[in-house]
Length: 121
Image 1 (cartoon, rainbow, N blue to C red):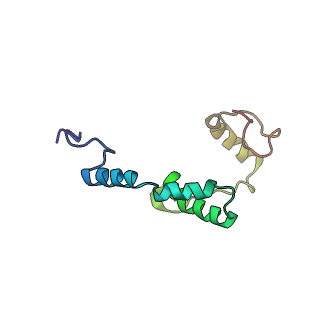
Image 2: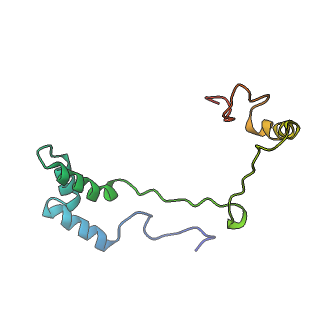
Image 3: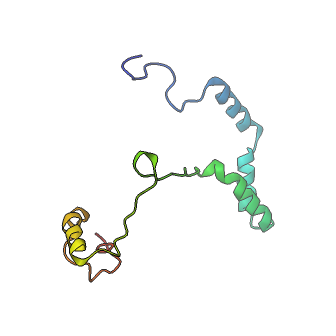
């Protein structure tokens, strides 16, 4: 193998012989289970509960499942938070001087009580 680079063999995503053969046989045999589920789901004359069941059953084959993500703090520990409500005006101004430029805003947040910055920026 050349320096962590794949050389030769099947390209990524290319099915092996058994998979390709199985897919050809399924295609020749008629309607696939997914095609059937989608057909029932799209049939306005079918019972709504049945259509819902077919949509639920077909969804994993049509839409990727989103992965959950765990957010953690340093070294996998809890995320640290800071309570700014008891800080003096002088301490808050010092923090604004330090972190204001990093946030891309400057000046007083009096016009923006949410502290979320300007809309659209």
